[in-house]
Each structure stands twice: as C-alpha cells, then as structure tokens.
Image (cartoon, rainbow, N blue to C red; front, side, top):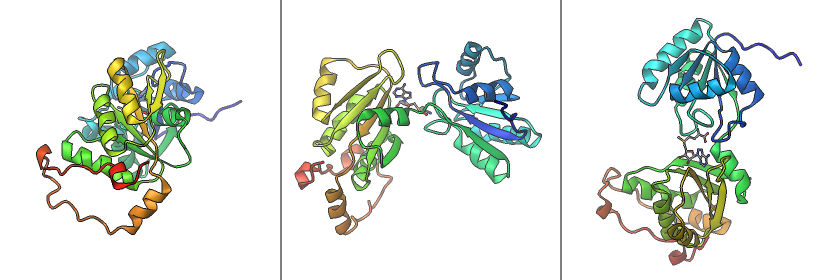
Length: 270
Ligand code: SAM
C-alpha cells in the first residue's frame, strides 16, 4: 500500500511504548523515520528508543521547564515547513506529560497538528480492569497539597463513570488509604506495570488492597481505578443544595481541613 508522505509544517504527536518496546505502531515508526526533528521530553531516553528502531534523527529537548521557550522554536520551525514529531518519555504526549502547550500554540497559529495514537496507560488500564468503560473520568495525578488533594478526591463523588488516577509508586499505598476513608464500599483496581514482565491487576475494596500491600511490597508504575459513583447516589446528591464554597481555598494547613465524610457513614456505600 502506498502511504502518503508526511506533510510539511506539521506537528505529529507520536505515542511511544509504556514498557513493552513492541508497542509502537507502524505509523509511529514511519513518522519518526521521516520527520525532520524529534522534540522529546528526555532526549537520552528517546535516543535509546530511536537506536532500538534503527533511526537517527536530530533531537530537541522539550520538557516541563522549557516548554514556553521551546514551543516558540518549534512553531518557527513548523512555519518554515519542518515536519516535527513530539514524543514524551512513555505513552501519549499531552497525557500527564508535556505537549498541550505547543499543540495549543500551533493550532492558534494555524499550523497543522496530527495525532499518531498508540500506547496510553489510561486506556490499557481501563480496558483490562473489568470496570465499566462506557463512561470514565481521567483524573491524572492528584495534587500533593493535603487540602487540594482531599477536595479533589471528594469531588470524584459527584462524577459518573470509572475514575482513573495516576499515582507514583511512593504514594500508592497512601492513596488506597485515602480511598478507604472516602469510598470504603467501592471496587478499586490497581493496574501495575502494564505491558511489562510483572504486569498485574489487583482488585478489591480499598481495605482488601491495603491488606495485600502490607503483606507484599508492590513496586513499579501504577494506574489506580475507582468504581464509579452509583446512579442513585449521584441522583441523591443532585437533589441536595450545593455546599458552601470553601471560604479560603488556599488554606492548605492539613489540620485546618474538616474530616471527610465517608460514603458509608452517609448511607451512600458505593
Ligand atoms: N503519557 C503517559 C500515558 O500516555 O499514559 C503517562 C505519563 S505519566 C508522567 C506517568 C504515569 O502513567 C505513571 O506514574 C503511572 O501512573 C502511569 N503509567 C505509565 N506507564 C505505566 C505502566 N507501564 N503501568 C502502569 N502505569 C503506568
């Protein structure tokens, strides 16, 4: 099959493996091979991927702390007709990874942007979790500050569908503990080390998962999925008047936060 060549002046968002190096599409490989430049979150890491694919290409670093400056450079080069592939360390650029800023700027400048879709931990975790995938909400990483974190976790109660959270291995046990306080009756799935040798799905109530985590040290990367709020709880909440907003949302002293109400205490077990 004759494939159309890459289009000059286009930014390609290329998804790369989240573990298993075989998880890269034919189109992603061709885009990396035929582009003029690869903008990468970590040039060393992407350099290794390109070497594995037998591709040599100029690399430009594009990460959280140089996004503004590098976006301008990428836009200038796109306007001059270059074909640029943007990749992150793993998975889909722009999903809890740099990318959004340069995409917005390119679109605002009338430049062409194309996705070259592929691996993404959200999709792998959700589709293999056994939890409903007809409606879901991607939460991404939770805030680190205690008050913001608690408010975010509480806000999930008002959202329908499976909730999907990214969490670092250092905080995953803490997160399951927080879910145990707020949503003790819900099913939670830990999707660990997706596409890698030690891939594993653990499901159960937060308390059951905590018991496992205290017995076994679970290592690696995690996606945490929380069963959605039951329809009757959503309907009951919708009938309630809106709670008063926090008088000072910037107050982050952990001790200043009132304790959260677990669902079961309010007769709303998930
Ligand atoms: N852009 C990536 C994507 O498309 O999924 C996400 C990058 S984000 C910086 C990294 C987080 O994604 C990890 O902390 C973890 O929550 C999740 N993740 C990435 N790879 C994973 C894997 N192989 N198994 C489980 N979770 C993974």
